Image (cartoon, rainbow, N blue to C red; front, side, top):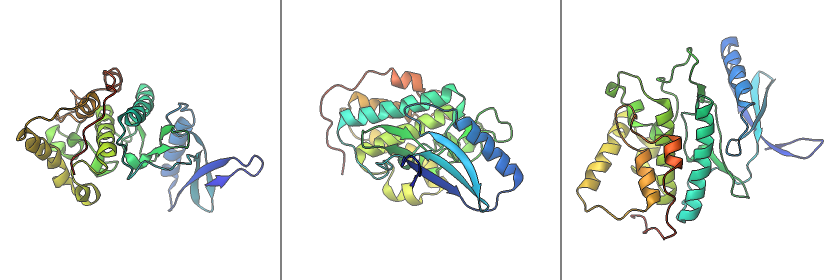
Length: 256
């Protein structure tokens, strides 16, 4: 955190270390210029980029509650509110043809007023940039959709928008369970092969048991994680946001 001397206002400062050649600097500058125009209540505001001592510094809106990483949200009304805010932010980005590609709990920040915002666009890309197509392996492996991990499913092509929805659904489920849905060790140390099989192995185990009674919120999260090869049948932001709101009834305790 840094403070503006004249006003005392707090900001977050992200420093990109390392030697960056001119081409990389120009690319980062273009992305920052785009992100500075992004104004939405669920998006962390980017105020600008500066160079100091060979380092690139990005000045961002400060969120005093930190990230949601490692937090369990068992109360469904609060979880629904978090989901609503994050979906609104993703929908805004998608309308502007921006794919985040690294939606995960540590990139979702909260403040003391319980406002939730999407952060860290260090790997966000503009879809129509031909220099960086969406089939590149940018992002955190554990939260990638199956079609991104296993490129044999679709010859390396996938729907970047649907990939963000998968990551969103996985994050919401993690908040409720209080752990990574496919196993804590897999989430932290999993490799490409193990993670590409995990969703299907989980579904197989679930099909062997009688189907549990799920809330509408759990059903929406499941729809976000549909495993079609290209993500084509996965819910979009608009369809997910228009799903029926969860009923005001307590959820069953998550499995231990």
